[in-house]
Image 1: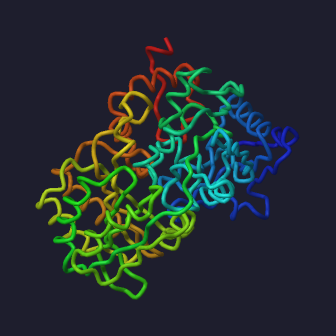
Image 2 (image 1 turned 90 degrees about the vertical axis):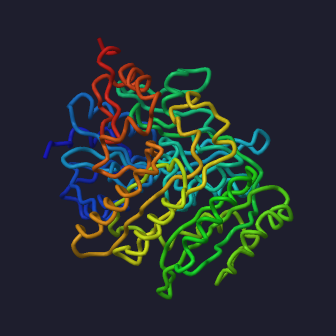
Length: 451
């Protein structure tokens, strides 16, 4: 392993090496399949530590990984024989309740973020699991419960503070480095180490949400109803559909709605057809704090167990697509595995495909096959996921959300960015021509731009 000791006196935070007592715990990330051994982990105390580490890595040619929440399923928050910049201690937030904005440091998870913003009755789009880091989710686009009303997380970033490959601290916004601002809104960690985000917030405190559960025997019928139902719902209502196993070991098809409008009575009326269909075997929908919704799925996504994912948008949820989906979902190799249709609509689709790095502004359903298991041979779970995904390709829209790409999906990175990929490569060359920031879903610097 490369020596990193010259970095130690430049830091206020901790430099953890394989000799440190906390090394094994510090190198663990959310996906238990990932077992990498970095030369060092820098637990940054502030922006100066990030600057020092980026400069050291660039000058010495040391591999560099960036960790916010560590939730990336591909394991891109760590590396072998390199340095991990761990921002987990950088959790500061400053809210301006008049402008409805927040400046949030990159080590926050959405649970931390919501705790601060909800004091003022404010929120923004922020994933579906409270332990996910704000950094990775936002930099990859940022799907979440509120996206129909508020847009993607990246759509709501007013400015970024970012350490670029030359060690400079830059502000990227519509007025400063607008090309970098465009790229950071969805282009991932390719352009620097973002240390804080300034978000637009919205007055949202209480939502109408929960689960509407149907027996697996009616999954096909339920998905056909779902397909038609979501065609006409307003921006404020998102409905996901998921095949999962209940805590008492029953396989079910669950609708998971979230109405985030200002008038919950409107939401109650909108949800009435969904709640009456079936009828369901369970219905937990009711008014709840937004933070309770954000934590509702946390038990299904615990830290440290094994995960392998495949995903894409579907072109159409035809009867054949539904039948194929249900057939494979019935044969899941683990009770922890979840198969989801994620509902994308509303404000997300009113942003131009070239307005940010994220071009995914057209299709209404993303399919996520989330294989999850504890211990044992990973091969049956990986094989099932790949076969399921391959069988659904006739119905694919040939596009994918970059944040759900697996470690073996690097060939699909251009698919995630579509017509924006070339411009991203040009901006990459402008700010990181040596590809210092390459432990990510990597966009290589454009050779033409470098030349």
